[in-house]
Image (cartoon, rainbow, N blue to C red; front, side, top):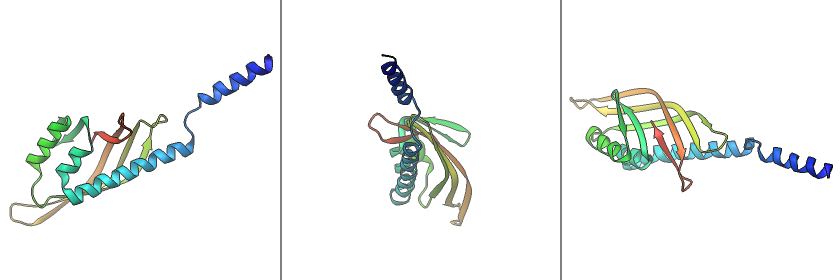
Length: 145
């Protein structure tokens, strides 16, 4: 009986261990792939479409000292703000994920280019930060950018 109790306790303890390093690395790879697909969509189909598609329903953007909340408002903001010729690209340089695999964040470098009022190409660079949340269907959508 004592052996049975010790065995059950051992299985219980093992079952309560956080996810393995391999699982964490797998989830990080998912986030890197989602970031790449997000960036690729912005290049192919435009900034507004990509930021709308990858937004969670309750996603939040911080732009021009304002908070834009919800997928509908995000689409409207990009529809009004992004101009023909605008280009945005980014690459995450850091990815981390929760032990449960349901939240992640990335940061890295971005480049935004646009045509000014004289038709001259201007380029801005900086650092981005995105928070990702796994959705009920298993997909990843950003909740903060």
